[in-house]
Structure formats: C-alpha cells, structure tokens
Length: 254
Ligand code: ZN
Image 1 (cartoon, rainbow, N blue to C red):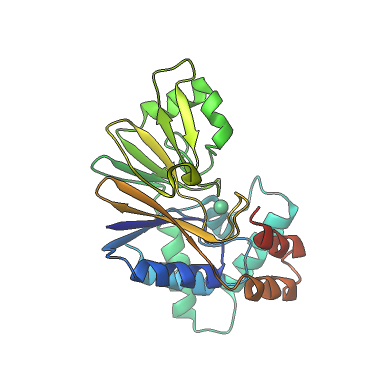
Image 2: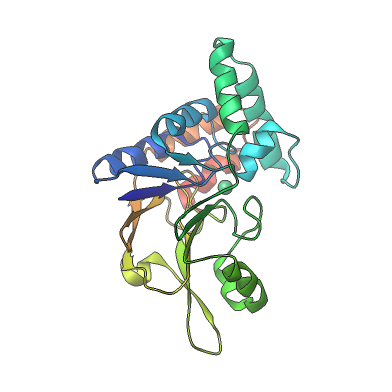
C-alpha cells in the first residue's frame, strides 16, 4: 500500500498526526507531492521528517521559492517564504545539518512516473505551478491537454482541495467528484483519473482536518486526520513574519 501526502507547509503537528495515521496501515512507501515548507512555523522539522519517511518527495512551488527568488506569491506567502529561507540558512544548528536540508530541497524532482502512476505537485502539463481546481472540470480544453499527458492515474497536490477527476461519455466529458460523494473510498477503474490528494498542513475544502490518500492496488482512500490545530496556530501567532491569517485559516480549513 502506498500513502500519498502533499502540501505540508511547515505544519509539524499535522504531519506528525498523518505519519501516525499512516503507521496504522500497511503502508510500504510514502510519496510526498511537494510544498513541504511555506506558510507554517516548522520548516526544518518537516523537511527532516519527509527526508526520513518518504521514498519520493517532489519539489513544490513554495519549496522552490524558499531556495530561489520567490516569484508570483502574494504578500503574506512571500513573507513566509523569506522567513522560511532565513530559518533554513541560519539558525543555531551545525552547518552540515543545514546544508543537508538545503541540498535535499535543491535535488527534488518535479515529477515522478512509476508504471502507470504519475506524481506531480501541480499538473502533468506544468508540474510545479499549474492548479487543477474542481471548476476546471468545465474547462474542456485545459482538461484535454492535461489528460493527454497522463497514461492512467495522476496524483497531484497544489490546490489543497481533495477529490478526483474522471472522464465520462457525456456533453460535459470531465467530472470532479469530492471524497464525501464516495464515502472517502473508491476503486479507480480503467479510465484515466486525476487525483487531487488534498493537503496535510493547510486544507482548503472547509474541513480543517489534515488530508492524505492511501492507494492499495486500485482502491483509493482519503483519510482525514485531526491534529492539534491550536498549537500550530499559537506558533504562527508568535512569529512576526507569519500573518495571523495563516493561523486563522487552519481553523476554518480554507
Ligand atoms: Zn501548497
């Protein structure tokens, strides 16, 4: 069984809770679709955990922003990224530890393909930066282009909105289905499917619990995991470079 996690965003409490939940299942390998850092208060701890627990870790746009010049981020996201960079580059740990983390981030691939499974942060077309939102089910041209690049199943992060896109023989050929619709577990069939795995550290579908997926053969299961949200929020409040809003949104899951 595989676990696929994404968009941790330096939320240590959420990541620890998700790893504990993964432990309860017979998971042989963990894939992380990127955005390990950005927004949240614990970038170093989160990098260390994914380094030690995940077989595959992709580069996310926030991870890239933390290493190079952040581009295309709004004010509070950019401030969080610059703060993250400061924490990773300085801090009072020995230099080898710091360099190991930065080197790890710098070496992250943008996509990984294993047989008929494709893993990206954004989309198959633009693995780092393109969002595939639920409303894109109506954007036929965009969906066609993305589907053309997918052999079978594509796991993607970036939107922080969980759910799957399936093809159907109708006037509207693409359909987005939320996990609630299929009671969090379904079998992927022979059709090409795009799977938005949701976000560990900053869910945006109105459910504040951490989100990730399990893949057991063709069976896909979305997991929602409670964690100590208030602890994360107080840490965010205590760091001047992280906007209070970044904490408040965790409580609301948006
Ligand atoms: Zn993200």
